[in-house]
Length: 504
Image 1: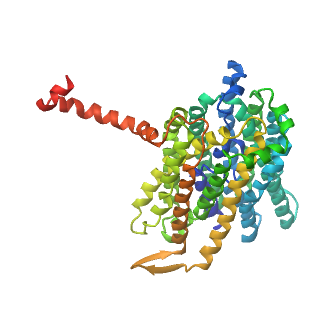
Image 2: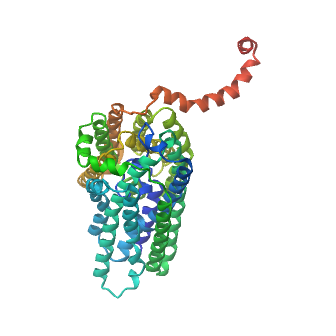
Image 3: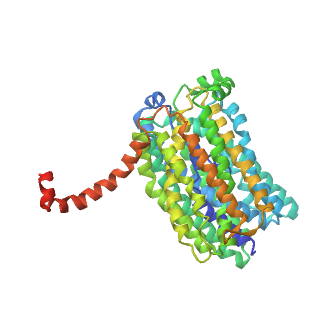
């Protein structure tokens, strides 16, 4: 039980800070994969084909569906998966396998593209998401089934594996569908506002799930609590399916995909506009994967903060991401995704470097990192989703998206495994320059350098919808600050005689 409570709370709180804008391994939900959230091609031809009333209804339903998906994720995946595994007696090896399963499932992106090709993207999404989310129904009764513990564990692992694989298929179909549906002129603002709602829903649901397990665990009701959370997740899954059915599907995509077939994958790999983005996805996700799994561990094991600081860090990241989402959405609409991705990539390179400075007696750098991380990852996520679909033509889009997802998942997975091995082989503690360091600090430094290199690759990206560059973005982001300064100080300066003539 002592193992269950920390792991569940830690996993839930980690989800609060899940601001990574990459194709995140472990995100098996259509609404929860920010790098692959859909938007249409730059010409907006598909969006114009959707009548105004069905479009408005569909966009509103997509926001509500995303909130339901976040509730499902909080109550059925992530930390709750770890809770189930420990409750059923899983060892560390099996828990490690469950953590790696979403990485392996990313390889299903290419078969998923074949499954989607030539089919209704809406119905492919509905079927795959239905299987992914409602597969958890048997878990509600699992604590009370008359099965041997080993048999219960095998049932649990099979359910998680099926759900994860179908989640990848559903995510791929959903992305292609949203790419046809959401108007290009609205995609930055729309997904910025959608991010606000999803972040709030995910934060509240994750806290509620963690608090439930933390409170009832000592009472011996862990099995009942896990069962109730799974039931809530399935109800949220049913609600999300109803909301998916309310959304419109533009005509023509199915025929285009059927004609393109696997040639679209070959075209994606050969496309000179796409290849730099594939290189970026691979390198960026690898750089992030070096350190992504070790921030909370470092707080608890090396900085000895306890779970309160972990919780505070996650909440600050989520709040800042919510507050900045609309700002980034407008910037992407007005200037383009590429400048935002460049600025955020170089800025995010500083995030793991900040973790080199906190000590058990000096924790204040973590507060700076939380604000910076929430702000920059929020912009990175919106820009990445915009560019992902902007580079993928409507014809054969599932294969383009599969290529992006595979590159990202492969980079993250390989880097995570190698980082774990390096942390094991390196000295746990050592002195350098008169300061105490740990093996985790090595990973933070390597991740920072890798992200800096990823920022360099972002400069080479092509954005078909870009309407400005980095200087335009900087001026746009600084405009509110300059306006506030001018409003505060210019009237004061105007009272000084030497400046008064200039303001007449």
